[in-house]
Image 1 (tube, one colour):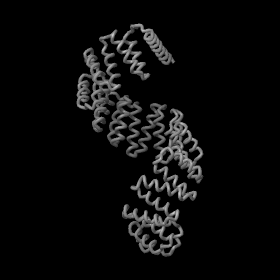
Image 2 (image 1 turned 120 degrees about the horizontal axis):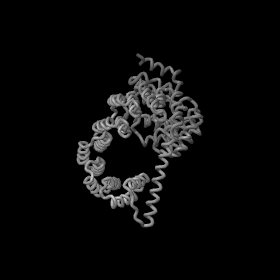
Image 3 (image 1 turned 45 degrees about the horizontal axis):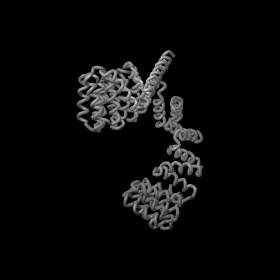
Length: 471
């Protein structure tokens, strides 16, 4: 309570200081302030994205405190952020003349060189600063800078080592640990990540981010029990950290433990701001439990957060599909596709829905569109041929399958599909011929013909051929 009152009081003092400064500026009066007060004004303008005002205050501060390296350093920082690199370097020269030991000077100069693509100069500046640094937090910042330089050159092994060292100097550094996990995801070096975080935890058992990263590393190796245990340690350390609940939910979901996953997701919802991905996960979990009404409730919450969330519209369509409410499914799929016109999964779902309501021509149009977008996927050829067949355009159906046969060699399913189609149009000779070709390639897949046409189970010709090829 006293801490909150102190923070409120401090904020109020800064606001009064800003008013005093701006009133004097408006009246074109000179105002004389202590260095600390100028620092507070500069920080306020920086935090409120008014760099031009911050620069103006810095110039006034330097008129009164011309031997302050801090103001030159701040000036350089703002100029560098605005890509005024020559002016920034000049300000850093003045700062270094006044305070040669200030690590921030070297960090900003290294950033300028990095923005200019001068990697060697940036590296040299940072390494020189490391020879002077004694404070662990300063060393952490310098190794984070090294990570920036290596990352800009896509040298990710060096990035990882720099981030490890940064975290060893400051085990509570969120930036070092967050970036290390991103780098682990990129390089997939999960074993190394496990070893590093276990080492870090040994000396800092209450580092919730180290436990969090450890959980992800175990998950990366499909070690889900250990992953869950690590995430639960995060919750034990900080029971308000919503991301850990989500990760526990993800582990449970991936293990098919949907009731448990649901509870973790609901806990996370109580702790977090409205989050469309979290609402989507919750909706998907209800879908897996077969509670489609509740699933849609959460999916609509996701859409309320982001009205352009195409995945949520698609999943609503999927719930209606499973209830065979085809018109509602079609409507939801169409809304998803309106937001993401080239998503092949969305398009295929809509085409299947049209097939289910005997809208063969509409389904065909969509399968043709999918085929134009991706001819590398075998299933797109099969779907297109089936769509032609369903609208009785048999010539095109067989033409597509014939081309697929040459593009995807030794695929038994294509021959089985051709066999069924030939049977259904009355060409028994070609039906048996293609059946035999399929059996020679992969006997076990012959079950497909009965899935496509169960009447063939009672067809002596087909059964006899199949028995001849049975081992």
